[in-house]
Length: 558
Image 1 (cartoon, rainbow, N blue to C red):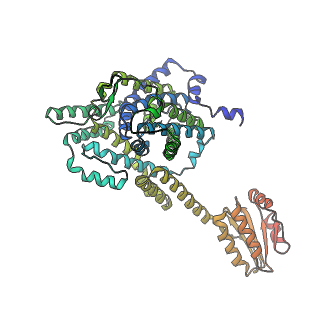
Image 2 (cartoon, one colour):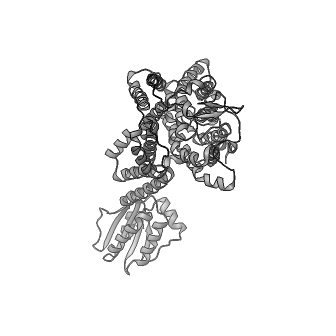
Image 3 (tube, rainbow, N blue to C red):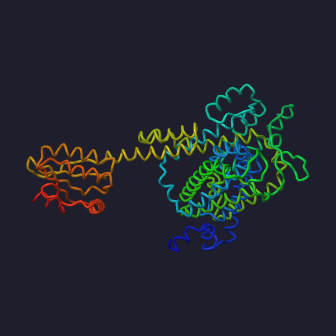
């Protein structure tokens, strides 16, 4: 690999470009500070809500936003990205945390970081461009539907002892538990959700997350005055202190270094068998992390007119996910909503993401007792809005109205598979189906067209338009063979044939073998790639059967 090319894959690219190669001034620092504080206010409640939705205590979401946020901001390739726990991972992390506990989830996160580093070193960054829009829209919408469904229990305060793993039984269980809804929790959730929906219409630049949570807490206080209880972070989550006593809510401690596989929780033993069991989930986390972080970087490029380094971004994401588990951090990636808010708040460099992470650490030290009073139904309301934004319903509707039928089928299939099975199945099937439908579409574009020239009745002059690849060649050459039964000479102009692949070459050789006696095939105007393919295959002229000419006039004159 060339040195210049290798240097573009190294981490720290965004930080070097934004703060070293460009002059970093006090004015830029003040803008980054405002942006970092703004995003930090959004990130604190979201990080806790996403950790809860992933099946772990809320402090681990804060650890993720802080530790991974710092490491990825330093090492990544996008200067405006803000990383931390994101809603897309919930559907993957929750089953892992339920089966393997917190320790297993952190080990899977570490493994996903290794995959991401390998993706970056292998320069897979630009491969994101080859995932079709219907596939990405389908699985992100499916994830949004799944996340929204998972919030119904806490939003209404349902009494549900066991939540089924699969989607349809889960929906049935939630409907069956609706009579147990707690009105206090539901009222808090409804008010929080209403503030989140109405706040952007007020035109106030302050993000609506904090006002919505304050409104929810105010309703909770009124409900508790009537003697009713509302489920909070402190009432559901507990932790052990160093002296063996138990605390409620969130510990007022900074992230502590610990080997991920030694953390408390359901029994998890680090072994080859356990790593093998976690491998599919870890690969899914890496794939989703790569897709989401690079999509986020592309969105930010469009907002700012800059250009990210895709492979450095993958390296940064990988390093962040390798470091974070040693401090209790779960899987992290670039968050599109937080990163967009970062840009809108005036960020100029990765320093804003660093300030956002430091604000999360400050909240752990100073606000942990207050954060423990946050109602779970209000956190569920936050995630309902996140799920709605993630589903991109307006894009789904636009695609349903305007896109070709093939794209609609791919999107709906990916959405359904994501909801009913998992994201990896959805992406795999979606990409394969989209590729097959695309090939069918291209194959139909390859045609035989009669040339507007005067020829004798037993001579045909035709032009092949489109690629002669495996999906189109058999049909084209079958038409040619039928025509050869009544013709003495067939002239084929190949100036509009950009590609001849192995399948097309095989079909071509079979046509030569099957040509009826007394019929000659003349090929002219062959483009470079088909000509090189024919030469490598050793295709030679056969007198009276196959001849080649530089252009149509020579083929006609012969």
